[in-house]
Length: 627
Picture (cartoon, rainbow, N blue to C red):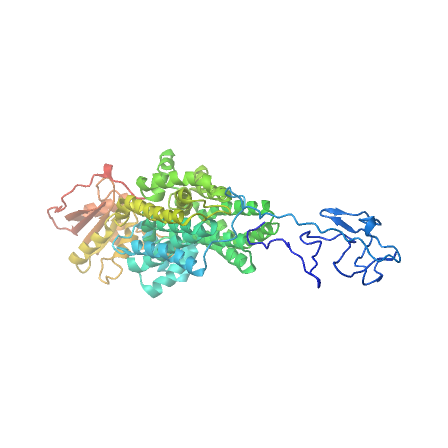
């Protein structure tokens, strides 16, 4: 019985002479029961319901009520002495029976035996729970958001987003069709906000900051406000929040979509309504549109549905099936088209070392991954009936993508970033359990002193994780590991270029696309003499090089070579014929070595001493590359 249920009726109604209802507190009447009042009444003279005499004071009928929990057999009288024969002036009145006290039902002591009806507090508490982690996350992400150079994947986003819709449609026929919704969104955003690093990173920053707030609301919905706030604030200071909040790729949107969808499902199970189920249905394609790997969270959603069905909800299964079926209708066509383009990530073939380093790469640092995941494992024991869905959330995606890596090539920490919030939520459960129950009917209960201690734990835990995260956060604001300094190369060329200069590229780091971005506003930039067919023409991110380099370079007076080769030879990343023509007809004027990049200036028919003004030599054997 709920603590809010009304107490059983235990009194009686006094009559005109101070009599008492003899059946007070019984809670039921016989199927054909009897009533004996204190003064006056009805008496059966052999015919039920016949008025006998106002002074007789009794009514007796078949199946007269005899006492608590007992009923007379049909056709019998409960008390033969209470039956008044014709002419009899008085009937014996049944003695009233005192009701037995009914003790209120105690709530379940163990987590998961009886779930609370919903999160405590009202809309103000929910708003505060969402806004505090969101504000903290956004402040951390916003700092230095435009300082770090774009890396090659971000250059790909810029290139696709700045294309016309026609050219974009040509591009996705051969590559990146699964990112079409994101590219369309970024196309619209760039047309309004511009294509500076800061402008292009703002949408991801907002999405990732909102993820911290959504995690807080999810923790509040599933457990307590303390758990939600701790999870949201802790997630806000994890290094990967800053790293991928400043990334011009859809990973932040994937995290936000997963958390929003899970929150809506939890709301639908707690307080179902047509509007909430419609919202959940619309959230399913958002998950797939942000990243196909994120759809693995639907396994955790299915477990939540099965638990609800086992608890007696027979409708929820049909509602979930309809929502998922309708939602996936908007994702499956894109997924089928993308299955034919899996070759673009065929380079991703993880080994056992990648699996071992997965926690570090998921959270941004071992100093954060170890305590969060250790506490998360402990939190599973105190999460009640929410433990199984959360366990599926954190285990199924990495295991499934690693096992199928040879076919799908989806095992990458950034593809599985949406699993990090579940780890943080479970860690928050473990910490807040010290201050009292966090699941079941007693969630959030306890003395004021104990609840206050819980808030102290929240503050201390967030401070501890933030301290451990500081080195990782500083690292995320630097250029991606091993990424060439294209920005520095562009500045040198802009300062020293002459009219008629040309530019050529050597390496495998998408040099042409990167330099196109860095020099996008320079109308006098060197001409790309060797580009034979543009990326738009072939529907790709790369161009087709000139098949007759001697003819294409005939008018070039000076030539800038942007090289990212690993062997230090600036010509080794070119087609052999092109390298031969350049080395035969041009002489090196100067060489500048930047981070993971060589910038070589060549001049036709002119001798010049090589000017290598860099202090450090490029050791290709020690170079590490961000993937």
